[in-house]
Length: 328
Image (cartoon, rainbow, N blue to C red; front, side, top):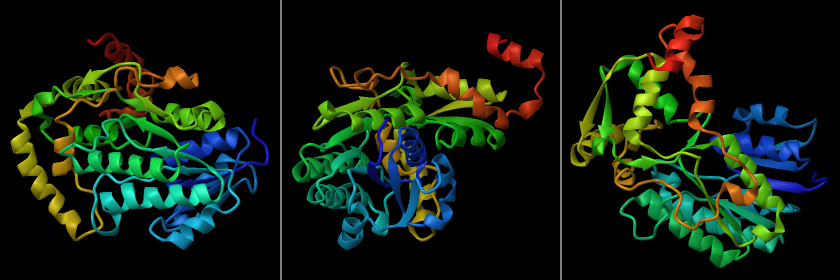
């Protein structure tokens, strides 16, 4: 167990952040959790003992604020990221410029660095998200060559925005869209497994300078995941293939309100571009196995929180649950 070691975590209040803070706290790290709005992140402190986790207001776009946040840290973790870039929170500002700023500050402070990117990061990608993630990786390597880079696939867990989003859509819509006919392959990873891998890679000096791609034990098509969601939520909906072009047009209008209001669009044009390419672990990449983690399956975790989208919720009878498990 680590003792008296300080980790500064940027993006601590996010989906991966809250699980990573918990994983670090369990192994004895003292944690400086940097958030834009720490008053909304009080749920982080119970993950550790009294005084172990400190909430700090920080701005990743400010050199002085970042330098102050990493002061005295033994390790720095950059878990920041956006799925829809606009204004100060654009892909370039968050994934590239802030990544460089954090890496430079960590190097100056003599701290180890772990940077979270994403599977599919590619300078040549037509997706702004994927291309910016790759430019961010390059910036991190230029400033802090020994940084550990972690590339998770689509992550799932109780607070995820994938399974929960489509399960919520199935409540009200007469159909679920299969973008690109649903052929895109995904390799979802359990967020707690990713957090565990982050903690283990950070603690392993041999991981310095390496890149890990973290995907779950199974690969699914987008269509298979939609069928799984409908089965687990007891919904009978049509699965309607939507060509990429038509999905892009729809996404154009869906993302327009987010250009002027602080809302998250249901679908963006860039997400449609992302779905044109499979999101799976590259051949020969370092994986969960290389940090000593056996990843959980979708089937072992997701039913434990999708029950709330079932018409009868927790009051499904044991007979109904057994029938669901048999697929009848």
